[in-house]
Picture (cartoon, helix red, strand yellow):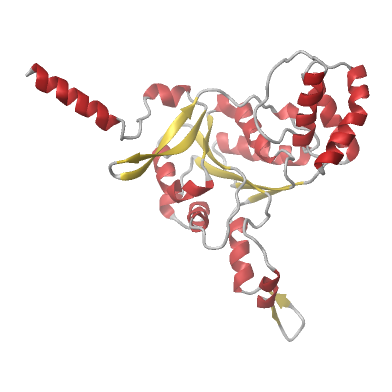
Length: 301
């Protein structure tokens, strides 16, 4: 009997390796964010929530020159955690200008109010209904975060996201919002041939055809649109100064780094918060400045 019990325990242990882990009460209470992951099992790919217990070290005060966008998303998120009506949010615009960092900073700002983040890859958007079902009975407030979102023609996640935003009863829940970032305003590629579908009326009005309407329909399901633009030169240098201070640089150091910061942006062909952050790391490291605290992420201001 003991041999049979040992073999049974071994079988169950091996079987558990093929099953997604279940969240415990401690996971729900201690995690500040979650990632949606897939695991190959005997029944195919099964999705599960992977808890993240460490907050992203980025704060609202670290994000410069996007005050209007910051005020809008903070206000919307405050309404959400206070159980007031709030909108799904689409953040679009130039790369490296702080779109994803702003969402992570909102998590930091409202985590004590019950806000939680669920990061979902574009390839897993077909599971949105399952994710909403998992969290719908929880007391926390969940933002489903889709970063760098865009679709090519025929991708399946496009229709799943449309249903989750507005259209599928099963995919809607009072404690869930969707925040997405994209470099494309309408999330889909736009071609010159699409203009051929426009219709002209007798009185001179122009109406978009079905192709254009379909491409616009997804982004229009987000109630709040926030656009981001590259900073001007003085704004870029102000961001550089902020991050150099973060690495322990003095005002004299920041003044000395000004020329190098401009050359760095010129060589990268871009001025953005991300470029400013990368320059500050490089310059501070080369000049032996003390390392205060790291800030994860891509776009920093």
